[in-house]
Image (tube, rainbow over all chains, first blue to last red; front, side):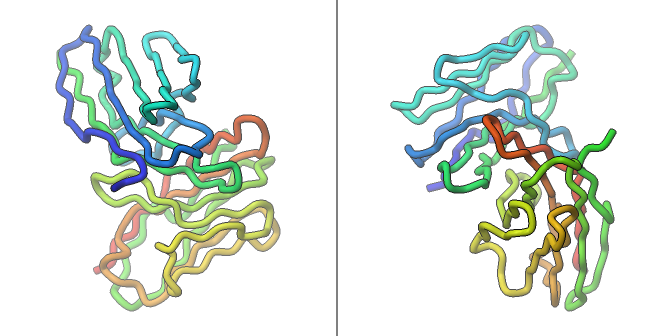
Length: 111
Length: 114
């Protein structure tokens, strides 16, 4: 079983749609959680951190459920520029610096 | 902009050759990470440094791979006797230890082994 699992998609949605991505992780000792965005042939860039209380940044909302070991990302009012791969990322435990990435979920927003 | 930089951006080599990549982190960052990414997959952790000390290495990092960060600033990743399976994007990231320890990635070095 992979440490971080995501549905690779692709998700094809029209502009203005709301789309949700989910992710599960296996290590209950994981400390920190993130969503990174990666455009084609570019480096990953931090989109947002994910907190137990949930957090929102404009059209983007992230949620963490520690009991279910589940992370979500909701994108409202999708824009063409949202087309990218969204990587679910877990920071191991406190004594490791490594990030563990999911496979990524590809989003294609169409006009 | 003084983000993470990596050189070269692309490298094509023949099987069996040695290659070396360089990463320059964000100047005040004390941690530096190497990841490898193949098509359709998320990045996989290889190793990381805190200052000049190499603190963790993945089992993915075979004996043919070696990384250094001699003065706690830039880092090099060397692959000896390259194999076709080494073809991938090699990503470097840096961070500053603290509350968030957010990792910022460089543009990567794309390696093609023929």
